[in-house]
Amino acid sequence: SDAGRSDAGRSDAGRSDAAEAASPRSADRRPSPLNLEHVNLPPRSSGGSGSKPGSRPGSGGARSADRMQRNTSSFVLDAEANPTPQSVAPPVFGDLGNIGEKHVLVMVGLPARGKTHMAKRLSQYLRFFHGARTQVFNVGTYRRRMMSKKADAQFFDQHDARSEALRKSFARAALKDMIDFLFQEDNVSYLEQRGFDSGRVAIYDATNTTRSRREWLREQLDALPLKLLFVESVCTDEEIIERNIWQAKVNNEDYQTEADKRRAYDDFRARIRKYEEVYEPMEEEHLSFIKLINCGRRVEINNIHGFLLGRIVQFLSNLHATHQTIYLSRHGQSEYNFQGKIGGDSGLSLMGEKYAMRLGEYADKQLSKDKETGQPRPCRLWTSSLQRTILTARHITHPKIKLENGREWTQFSPRVLRNLDEIYAGVCDGMTYEEIEANYPEEFALRRENKLGYRYPRGESYLDVISRLDPLIQELESYQEPVLIVGHQGVLRLIYAYFMGMDRADACTASIPLNTVIKLTPLTHTCEEERDVLYQPSKHDLGAVVEEGDGAGGGVSPTAAEARAASFDNPFAMNTEPPSH
View 1 (cartoon, rainbow, N blue to C red):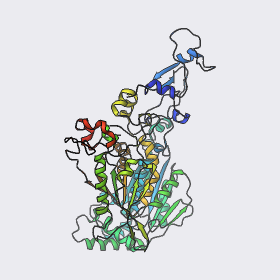
View 2 (view 1 turned 180 degrees about the vertical axis):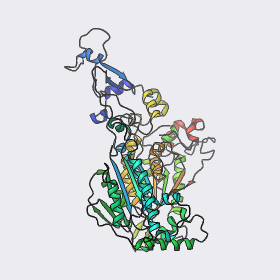
View 3 (view 1 turned 120 degrees about the horizontal axis):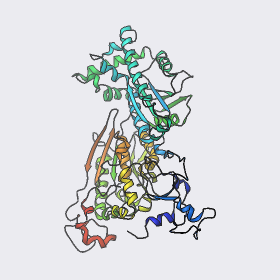
View 4 (view 1 turned 90 degrees about the horizontal axis):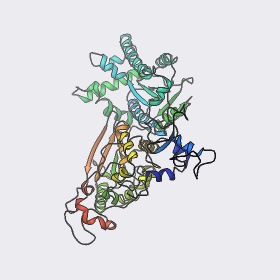
């Protein structure tokens, strides 16, 4: 509410570097042709034509200022001075993609090798972190839709001409839809496409186990303007194959009505043997391919070029077939939460401290032990670098345990990661939303229009946070142990939305309440979610009971004594989800 935070003050101060001045705060909002906010321009003359004091040499003084128009929070040149403005702003990294480029990824491998799991995880990663339009075309889905009866193992006999013809028809149908998806909007001009299309990636999910089938696909796609990559999954670990069959295959649509699950398992094993008779591993050196052996324990790449293909290789190298569990927890209520302020680096309120103690108990009793055996299991802990997350996690203990391989493991060994810090609100850091609306009404309105792409003045947007979360998501995908992340609402929204398969535009409003642990278990076709509320504030905590001393109500930190008297009337004291950041 400081009067010094005026719009004029912002203009005088300017941005510290030209790059920030040139980039739009809203990735989806078409920018003004030229942002000169960082230039100290003279005030518009109220009369006369002479140069005013403070005019830049050669600027034309008041005449130059008269050519400037006030538009929201920046100066822009009028149409006469800038007749051919840049039509589309450069995208920020999180929205970059490979504009106009099209990629096709063809899965290769025997059944139950994790191909569909890879395809779906990769599709969500490229859509969420690279702004690409993605879609998986699973040939098995086309078979189930186009056949009148369920296919048993005999249908996959590679020497049966009739079955082969049917399987080829399903492959053609999937291929046709895939090509339509890739090129369905190419009737717009390139300039128009630049405004909304961040590239397209189609994933062709089938076994493609023979050289002839792969060559057929190459021939069909060779004349089209796209990049083609084959992704082969090789697995010789019988334990992984067994788990994949039971978890992802026996329970899929092919066996939905089977009462005898063992019979379904045996039928699927027979199907695998049919494919093994003709399987030819990838050795075609003229093709681009990545070969993942035993869930990334060994990786081979051939003829890989380009930024996005390199990122795909990196992501797939971190994937594995184990369904790890991720636990998300916001920090306990902070002093700024209680006061309705955003950002900052405040400590915990008394309510926040009570939740921190409950979280320590929950981690010890629920997370660190295997529910079936009761034996200790290794767990990881991540926090941001801001003190409210570190303080929330400080009651979690770190005993040493012995792993099956004899190695010693420190439970919940804390990793402090700046990439997990909350969205930086720039000049609005430490303000309430009412103060932002009063001091920066234009900025307040812009954020309401586009919460995903809006960037706080000298601060960050959700797209900026997506960019810095990219490496952490790849590391999370590589872990096989449970991970507890104690973070912030904005950042946890993005992590939650990614694993739940949500669109990133919807992530900005995902519910991540205080005092709650969200358990996510990503599976092949879905992501299981459970929510445990660890702490329900009492009337005393909410300020209904007024006492003397350090334990007085309101959930207020001892350092916020001035707010104590009004604690019960403060809506944020009772709100388990404070204002959306």
